[in-house]
Every structure is written in structure tokens, then in C-alpha cells.
Image 1 (cartoon, helix red, strand yellow):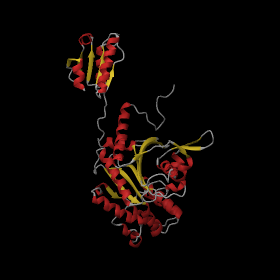
Image 2 (tube, rainbow, N blue to C red):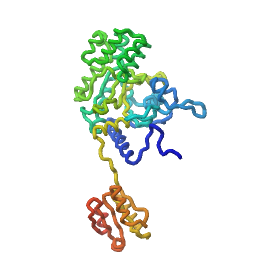
Image 3 (cartoon, rainbow, N blue to C red):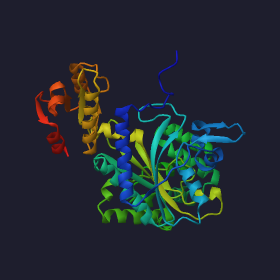
Image 4 (spheres, rainbow, N blue to C red):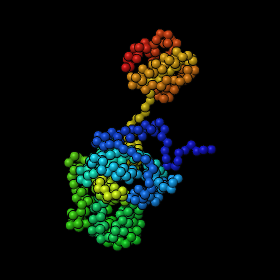
Amino acid sequence: MLSTQPYKGARDFYPQDMQIRNYIFETWKKVCKLYGYEEYDFPILEPFEIFAAKTGEEIVNQQLFSFEDKSGRKLAMRPEITPGTVRMLAAKYKALVKPIRWFMIGNNWRYEQPQKGRGREFYQLEVNIFGSANIAADFEIFSIIIDLMKAFGANETMFSLSVSDRRLVTGLLEDALSLTDAQILGTRRLMDRRSKMSKDAFESTLQVIGLDKAQIQKVEQFMSSSFENLSQVILPSILTANEGYQNLLNLFELLKQVDLAKFCKFDPSIIRGFDYSDGLVYEVFDKNPKNTRSLFGGERFDKLIQIFGDYDLPATGFAMGDVTLNEFLLGWSLMPNLKQQPDFLVALWPKNSIDYIKTANYVATKLRDAGKSVIVWVDPNTKLEKQLKYANRKEIPQVVIIGKTELENNTVTIKDMQTGSQETKPLDKFLNDIS
């Protein structure tokens, strides 16, 4: 027997699931368009080397769905949207008017162990600004993130936007601790995984990389530091000259001016696992005690486009997933009632007569012209009782009954399924009242 289940970690979307998905997608689109962003799309299959170049070791080596086509070309199903977006920009680099504000909703695939809030396929909203290195672009991205969360009914007690800067991490590892490039890369990757490791495992792995006890202590101290106390970890002379530190100072000032600072906090443990992250990095966290996890994140990726050639296109943006967002909305009871039942059922009299069918479809057409959602019963040999039971189960509020008397007198009987009351009206009056 064939299985009726979808592939492990993938989802079927039944009508009630599609209502939720459409609600999420429509809210995403509405907010993005309020900021003047344009929607785009591209194929789910991409050349393997696009992801191998910069996506990140864990995703490429362990999570990528990849294969060779019949011509021997190595392809991959996209695990994320950003590299393909940059490919599109490089293809029309000179023609595009900058700065570029784009958003996309796309399906991604990663070979992960399915668990709550994570599957092998998921949709993401990708939002980016290309062509501006100014902190004002990052501030706009933060504003969009906060407005998106507010559009779903969330407030500052429900989520936080944690932010750091890769250049600040470089200031610690390179300038303050004098690590080699290989040590910096290894340490940074470990810092990104710190929350998933024990203290002993973290420190012993840093020792393997080549850090001594004093350097390890500085890394630990940095990862638990507040923004105000960074000078206790990194020399003030190094700190004040650090572009990432200055960037954060300016960002926090902008956020304070428009009362958005209450949503944000400095968190030096935010590293992001993508190799292309090269500046500001941030993640949105659920504050629900039952689901204290990262919901989504973003970063600066000013140099990613250079995998396609000698292009200059600074970029900043984020990707928000539908699976984690759905868990967030359910956890905070923010999911609205999305039932979309028809307005009317037009019942057919249990007699196989073309006159009943013609009249029923005439009424339905007029109701649809007036903007109403209407189902016409398709089997004229069904008892009226069964049609009314169907309307009840589908939660259709009103049934239009056209029986022998109604047909002869050019009337209709309207039955209210909630109260059980019914009223007979002239057909023309009923249709005029609706329109």
C-alpha cells in the first residue's frame, strides 16, 4: 500500500491550513508594501556552488538537498533565499535603480531532524535593502521587523530583537586577542553554537583551536557583557575605533528617537551561522517561557555579491519563517479566527427538474455579482434535510430554498441556520436587498 503521508518534515496544506498560510503571507506582503518594497521570485533549484561558496558549513555539508541532473550539473534545492537573490541582482546589476528594496516569499528545504517549530520544508519572507551601507538602512529593516510583529498583534512583552555586530567580534578576536584568521573563524563558529554547548565543551574546544585560558576567559566575558560594559573586555582605544561599535551606538540612538529601543537589546552572543554575515547581526526571540527560542534573524552581507564578480552592492536584511511564526502566534493566542465559510447555500428541491437548477444558478449568479460567496447544491435528488445538515456542518449561515411553491410564485425562502427561523420573500426584493 502507498503511504498517505507527505515526505518526512514536509507538510500538506488542507483548506484550514491554507487559511493560516494565506493570513501570514498577506500580512507579510501588506507591511512590506507599506515600506515601498517590491516583490520578486526565482526557481527553487540553484547551482550547488552558489550555496557552497558562502552559505555556511553546516547547511552545505549536512542539510542541503543536492543532486546531479541528466547533464551532470550539480544542483541544490535552496535552503535559503539570500544567495539566489544576490545572483539575480548581479545579473542586472547596471540596470537596477539603487537602492533596491525587495521582498520575496519562497519555499526552502533543509535536511534537518523535524521537531517543534522546524521541518525540512518551510516558507520564508526575505526582506532586503541593497545599495546602502548607511545605518539608516539597517534602522529601516529593524522598523519593518517590529511593524511585522505588531501587525500580527505582538508587543514588546512578547518578543525581543537582539543585536550585535560581526566587526565588534572581530575587534575582540583579532585586535584584542590577536588570534589568527583560522582561530577567528573557528572561535566565531563556536560562539554561534555556545547556547547549545556545555561550558566545559565550549572551553575545551576553544583550547583545541589554540586559545589559552586568558583568551578563553575574555571570550566568555565578552559573550555575557552589556553594551555599556564592553570597555571592561575590549580596550577603550580599540573599542572606540571599531566600526561595529560605532554602528551600534548610532543604531541605538535612532531607535530611541522613535520609541523602538524598547523592542531591542544588545546581545554579544548573536553571531549568525552564515559565512557571508559581515556587519550588523540580529535575531528575534520569543519571550514566551514555554518557547524561549530564536524566531528568525538577519544581518549585513555587503560582500556576498562578490561571489559573482567585481560588484559593489552593500546589503542588509532578514528572513522570517512561517513555521516558527505560527508557533509564536499560537503560543501567545494571537492567531485570529480564520474560518471562511460561504455566505449562502442555494438548496435544490429534491426533484430532477431543469427549472429548479436554472433558478438556483440564476440566484447564485446574482448573489455572487453582489460579492457574496455561494455554494449551489449539485445533486437535485438529495433530500432537503441532508442539504441543511451540510450547511450546518460547513457553518454556512443562510440557506436559500427554492421549492415548488417558490418556483410557481417567483419567491425564495431564506433559512437562518443559527436561529432556525425562515422567511419567504419575492425573488426580486431578496436580490435587491442583497445588492
